[in-house]
Image (cartoon, rainbow, N blue to C red):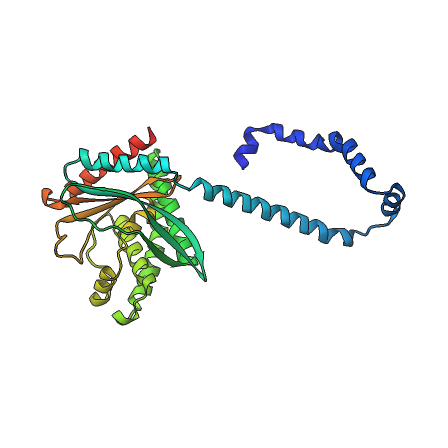
Length: 318
């Protein structure tokens, strides 16, 4: 809105509308109301204390209307059309066909909503493609739950990391990294304390699984090294990993590539998953799977996934 007004100063011309519309307004009033009644009404004295409540109501109504219109506009802009779905399907098919180690690709849309006393992220399936003779499960929809303070801190950390990624000046980039690391460590400590407070597997709730995935993504990113274990109680940590599929959430935390394995399946031992944001405007994230048996080291897997992300995102913005 601010940018709109700055680029289009002609909106000040609306100030003269009162003079232009005055004759029309006078005709309208005199047509529907008696002239003597209008004069009597105008002759009445009006106190400021009588006007203030009406002015405040008008201002509040105007602000609420603007907020509602903006929210509806944003919500409508997130809707994925049938044409966009067709493009998504073609993109996913192309990625699977042109990259021999890719087993499948799926597209999801995520939306942040409010619940009673908490925020939640709704993840909905949009499209998918798989290679021949590949058995792959998909998620039609799932939800990630957070308290308002935790979700606010996640957004803050994500925003700082995004500034770090986008910055090209080395000095400023280092400052952004420091800001991200400080905020990220604070959030990780809070998440770890909450999860370490779980005394047994029976105390685990769905929100704990979501908190664990955020911790599992942020801490290695800040440390710059892989971390096998995050919590004090191994049985609680194992249950958190097995209880709910939250891999895609790792990519949503800081809007970046996230690579993970399915640690709960014997038949999918070699399968490696990677998730990354595809369209920030539409809140679309991609989830891919590759056969990890073709790679000797995790660094090779990471390099391969980054090359896929680069090709997909560059073709999207082209």
